[in-house]
Length: 146
Image (cartoon, helix red, strand yellow):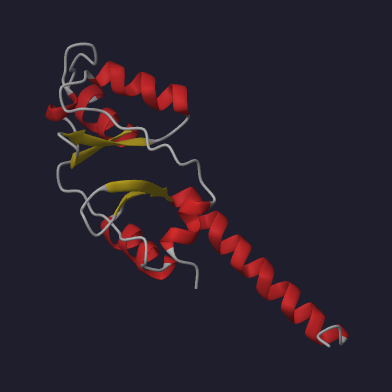
């Protein structure tokens, strides 16, 4: 089973974050510029929340707030579920499914943010695992296994 660390190795190393004081507009600019769906909210080097497109739609647009004047702190998701690099993809999928989330920040043992896993990353990893299994089965069936 693929670990979170293995998934992170196939991703860009940079983790794009915002501060709680940033405006929602600034956070949206980051999401659009980096083509990402969520950004961890970091204050003094510590993960304090996550801001996603869903937060914008549900907490800014639907409430008639101004994205240029609303700080991320007011609309971010404060209860952040996280995962460790040594955990496997099953744990990741379980958390995402049970908690109805699409992004999981990855924290090391020192509680430092080292990455973020998206549902797209999980799907890619599942497809890769399935392809390896298919290849092995084809080799076995055709007698190419040695």
